Length: 261
Ligand code: ADP
Image 1: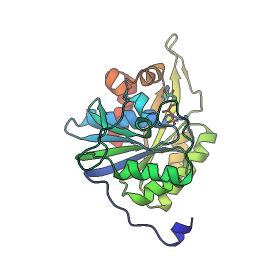
Image 2: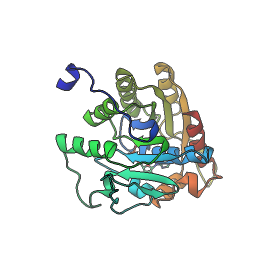
Image 3: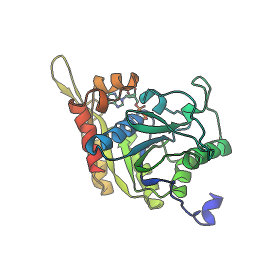
Image 4: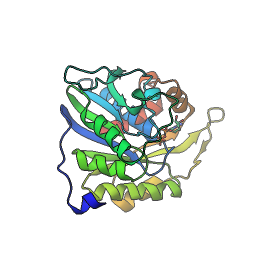
């Protein structure tokens, strides 16, 4: 908190990047990374000429390598910058490329901060229209540090419709507001389950919780993503639903989020 008392450090854009969109959540496990990946792919699907990158800033639990089916060590450029790894047309950078899969990520304090600093400043993105950042869950020092270091066009907050997730989502929205990052809106995830056998619809985590929160906060609902086996399975295979089943309603739901941001 001490550095805050001395005023915000000056924000510096990431070289080559036009707009940064962060994807955040109050809690873990609500589908933030899945949304970040499919949002990045959705931005590209909606506008084939757009250049989109993906930065996994979830240093404690990086999931972009698995979701984007990428592994390996980034090469260094002549300028000593890391070259992102690319799949599905999206250059990606993640702490997961820099440490062993099995290595426990137990950095604390300064080590995490220096990792974040590297991921923000020492990557050769080339020229990007959008950089989607998959944030760590919650509202800690890492999130604060990112918002203070780079200009951010807007934040997308992912929540399930449950009260317990919504309380934390609200805290997230309030943090962004305090640091003057526009909250683009909420994505309500896992709202409805369509039984593939009988077509019955079940609202497992409640119905409209995120919608009510969006209303209270005065922000938009950017989309409503169903709880669907196809999303889980394609994610686990590293074949995100927007590219592997582009004609499915699930992919359509993510593309709608992409056109709403
Ligand atoms: P977070 O980044 O918030 O921790 P993830 O994106 O890793 O959450 O998602 C957690 C788990 O839930 C993953 O196994 C993912 O495949 C699954 N998941 C996320 N969204 C959905 C959805 N709409 N339908 C089915 N499974 C989902």
